[in-house]
Image (cartoon, rainbow, N blue to C red; front, side, top):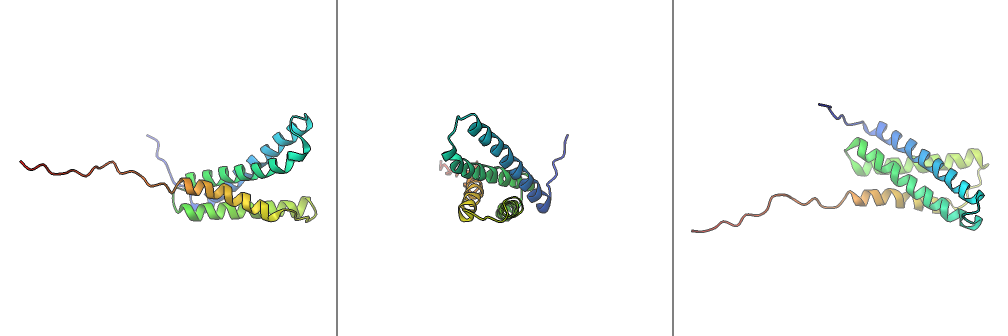
Length: 136
């Protein structure tokens, strides 16, 4: 039988951030393909970018929390924070530090990470039922 090992928190966070960046790049490629083929108008590129950032943040946080299986709030928060810092560093390096709509990007990262975090907070139903004793 296969033994499942937990991954440490830093390794899980790094894997989650790498997955989030990969999903973001794939989403950007798909969005640019749709714009080039004129399936989507150029005016909707901003909305597409917001959706891509939220989805990539959600998938990265989900993967990190699924791999670590411990301290979900810490793992989700660190993954979202590091992903946001990676986005800021990409802006600084490739776009000459033109920080436009940074708050909106932070909101989308928080929405993606918060959605995954809130889905995990649902209360587990207990299998045991309260047995009422029968008096004979």
